[in-house]
Amino acid sequence: MSFAPTYLDWNATTPLDAAVREAMLPWLGAAAPARFGNASSRHEYGRQARAAIDEARTRVAAAVGAHATEVVFTSGGSEANNLFIKGAAATMKPGLIAVSAIEHPCVREPARQLQRGGWRMHEIAVDTQGRVDAGDWQAMLEARPRLVSVMLANNETGVLQDVALLAAQARKVGAWFHTDAVQALGKVEVDFRALGVHALTLSAHKIGGPLGAGALVVDKRVELAPLIAGGGQERGLRSGTENVAAIVGFGVACEHAAARRAAEHARLSVLRDELESALAGFGAQIFSAGVERLPNTVFFALADIDGETLVGKLDRAGFACASGSACSSANPEPSHTLLAMGVAPDIARGALRVSLGRDTSAHDVRRFIETFVRVAGELRNLASVAR
Image (cartoon, rainbow, N blue to C red; front, side, top):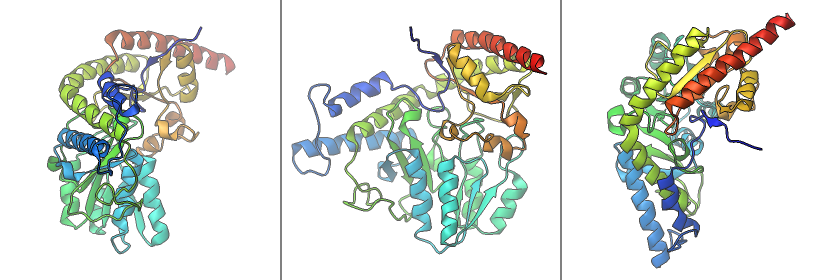
C-alpha cells in the first residue's frame, strides 16, 4: 500500500491552494461557465480573458506594493530572471554585471552567458552567515557595475539580505538593481517601492499557485529587450498567447498569501525554533542561525552523515524534505551556497533542508524530530560499525 509522506519541502514547491484551484477551473473547462478565450481576441470570449488577466495583474501588483502596469507575466521565476538580466544587458554597452555568490542558477547562468558578449562578471562574496560581504560589496561598487542582482531570500538557508540598502547604494553608482524575491513572497513583507529596486521576480508555485506562472515586476522607466518576440503581449516584453488559467491562479494565490502572511510568519517561526532546538541538541550544525531568515526554513547538517542518504531514509520513514535546492538536485556537488559561506565540502555534502508551510502542524514537526533522531542514530551506528 502506498502512502503520502508528510511534506516538508515547501521551498521547492507548494500544493495548489483550494481557492486557487476553484478560480482556475472555469479556464480549464472544468467548471461552468467554461471560459477559453484568447485574450488578444476582440469578441466577448477574448474580452473575458483579457479582463481576467487584468484582474490577476492588479492582485499580483497589490501583493508587492507595485502598480499593475509594472507587472509582466512570464512562465515562472527562471524566465523572469532571464528577462531582466539578458533584456537589460541587450540595451547597454557591455560592462560589469555583479550577482551574489549564493544566487539561484537562473540568475548565475544568464550572467555567465553575458561574458560571451564582452561583459565582465563578478560574484559578490558572502560571509559565513550567508550575508553579502561588506568589503567585497564596496569594492564591487567602486568598479561601477551596470547590472546587479542580489536575492531577497535564499532558497536554501532562508537568509534575508538588506536589499533596500544594497539597492540604494547600487543606484548611486548608476547600476540597475534586480532582486529575486521568489522565496520571500508570502513569508516576509515584499514592497517594490520600499525596496527601491528596478525589478523583482516572483513565482506562483511557491505560494500555493500553479506551476508555470511567474512575473517580473519592473519599473516602467527601465528599458528591456524581450526574450521572446512575436505578437507584442505583456508590453511587448513577453510575446505569446497568455496562459489565462495559470495567471488567474497566480493572482488569487498572491491575494491569499498576502492576507495570511503575518499570521503564518508568527506560527512558522515558533515551529522553526522548536525544530532547530531539537536538531542542535542532537549535534546538528544549523546554518545561518545568527542572522535574520525566513520563518519556515531550516538548513542543517550532521558532520558524519551524508545528506542524500538521510533524505532517502526519511522519505521511506514518511517525511519529504530535501538535501538542498530542488533545481540543483541532479548535481551531486555540495551546495554552492554553503561553499560560498566557507562551509567545508564534507559538511556541505551532509546538508539537509526542511521547509515548512501552511499545512505543517506542530504535530508534524514533533513527529519529524522523533523520526529524525531515530533514523540519524541508525545511520551513525552503521557508520561506526563500518569503521
